[in-house]
Amino acid sequence: MRNRKAFTLVELLVVIGIIALLIGILVPVLSKARASSVRTKCLSNVRSMQIAQWAYATSNRGYLIQGGMSHGTDHANEELTWFNVLNKYFGGKLAARCPGDMSPHFEVPMPTTTDVFRRTSYGINAFLDRDLCPWGPGFSEPDPNGQYVKIEQIKQASTVIQFVEMAWQGDYAASDHVHPNLFATQFTPSAAIPARAAQQMQINAHGGAINWQARANYGFLDGHAESLTLREVFTSIYVNHFDPASPQPLP
Image (tube, rainbow, N blue to C red; front, side):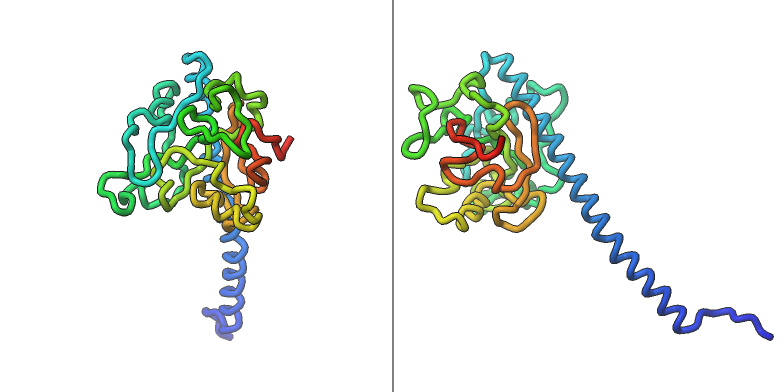
């Protein structure tokens, strides 16, 4: 009798089928593990910014850091942007880019410009910027000047967002702040709000489509950071985690 030295066609097909099955099982698992790692590293970046903000406030009588890069094509105050300022107060060098950030504008200038690039994945909430703070119909004035300028003015720092992830494309891709008061008006249909918010923030930076379940990382004024859906941070101009005068949707 002769020894068999090769697989039969049936055996070969069975082996190929098993390999394909294992790949089908492993690829989603590895993809989820990578996404989780990216989200965790990004959260660490945001927490570092919050630590630097507290160091800045401690050294500057409680004042909050300010934006410096306009949306669109104007970067007149780039040297004074919050990111450059906080770098001086952080023990090491702050990470400017989220590892999952797919914006092309770190390498490619913004449309219609030759010298304006994306400098950071992150931005601040304009409600906490004394020069950008919106107030008026639908928003309560925090003080006689209509501005939040110090941490002590925020009654519930643990519920107010300071840092967000900026949109990868569009006018806000090269900016360092967002205007949450523009996400909606009292007349905006609920279904339209995610698309409006996505013009400024990358609301699905860590999962989901452009809808209420889109997930991104947010840094809160008390120093903690969370990965949350848009629904968890913004429900309307009256109820959200951006306007310090708003009743918060989460405990």
